[in-house]
Length: 158
Image (tube, rainbow, N blue to C red):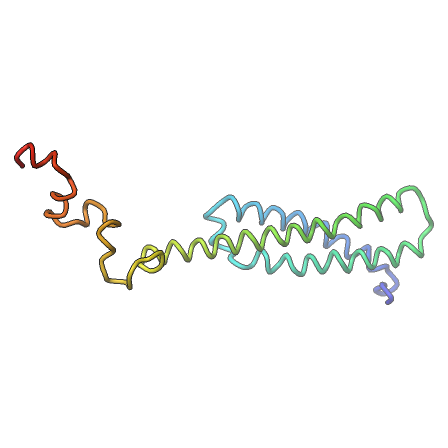
């Protein structure tokens, strides 16, 4: 495949995009993982934008290998090629981390909402009182509170 755009090697243009998108995606992944207020805003956007970034790294590597065969070899060229080969696994790990953080937040939030509505974890349908052993003291009737307080109340005469 010819990796040129109007006579300019495409690798030069793509590297600029990778240099910008990879650190921005890393910062977004860290921010959405550690900061709950930021996590609610972008939603699926962080991992969804990381996938084209991963493809961009792959295409940039291929364009770099194409360019490697056409440039004069200096000491910096093989070093740059070695560094470029390590970037694809890093970009893949970043995509995996952003996807895992999004999935973890999404499904843990669903569980919290379901438990607030009374669904899941052995509870009945919404609107129905939970079993007595899971009721808090304020949800129990006065008779249940008296029975659960044990023999100490009976001895006091209350």
